[in-house]
Length: 528
Image 1 (cartoon, rainbow, N blue to C red):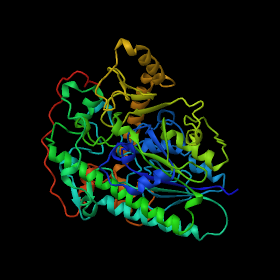
Image 2: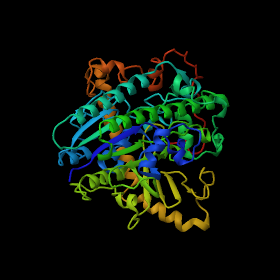
Image 3: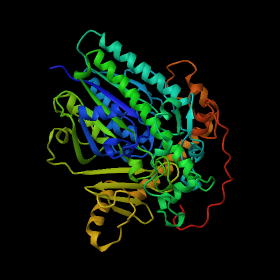
Image 4: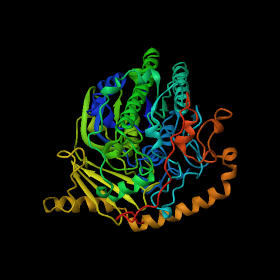
């Protein structure tokens, strides 16, 4: 029996809670809805790390971030760690990527035979965070200008990039349809929408009635009422430097929804190619994202936090032998994707050479919950925070741990907006103790602190002596000559990623001036 083709179609920073299948009736995404009807939709799917590179490393290796030292967006994925692509190649799969994967380090393939496009982000150590600088350690320069400057555009860097990614991905499908032989393929198409900045094409912006854009369910929470992790991000994102109005929020959400519609269009184009080439019925299609976006909930934006908008991701799987129109309510995460796809490709067998933290989800897709733990975990050590942070969800309960600071516990069934912290309440003491123990299982926050600080210092040293040559010698695989100058690179504009992207916006929008950062007040929970 011929093995199925596999397509991994990824969005970047798309929250599950922005889609109709997860309760949002504002976003227009008919192709995502159609894919959901073709296959299985996981209602409670999570990222294992709410930022780009570590999340993708986990997804492709079946290993949790702390197990492979995936500490941040400048962490190297070691060439010695087997990936999904390596395993698939042992089964004669042709492995191809079009788009972003944010590999850091000299190995820019990690088992992919071909890269059809250059990566949009740097592959060097430019974005190493520094906990010793406190909450404002944000090497990418992420800030609230992205919200204030939100709106439509004629063209942007992300449109430039994603148009290429989609074109070359679809062209490769035509090429694969003409190939001889029976060897299957694994094709990754990884777009950058709806990642910030919040800038959408006029075509997609105009699909929405601006006045009908829904506003956040939870309004901004005063600084003195925020948990420690959120206080850190308040300063890291510069929320003290710009005033965000309701209109800013509506504009940014409008643009975000429009960018989701752009992703939907690209998915629809790919589905038409598969249908026209008679490959649709022989192909497993996975639609997902690396993490979400807070979209103004609680006054928060971007990712980097464990609240639902940031960590809940869309996950839909369709293909031969899988149910159609099925929903799965159990908790799953991206780390489960590798064993699942290996099982689908290898008649139910997951033959990994290393220990995997991920678990095959085939049983959940086909109707069995036997043996499923219903547990997921998520970690965060990157810019903005100053200590190891981890989240565990089991059943309806989510436990959030910030090392050295108070923890939080939420009942997501009774409190889906996470506004009622149950930690410390006698009625849930047993649950809190259990989830705390799960959080600490094979994870020592004191040891993690030492490992992370040592890693930050080592990579910062290397970056400081090499950054002058970064544009020329960046590890990024350059598929098209000049791409290292076209896309975001660490040796370039140090105003930050959003500023670099903003300069590629057409028409150009004058940069909003931020107030000077003030000394962080002596607020409890802000000390390292």
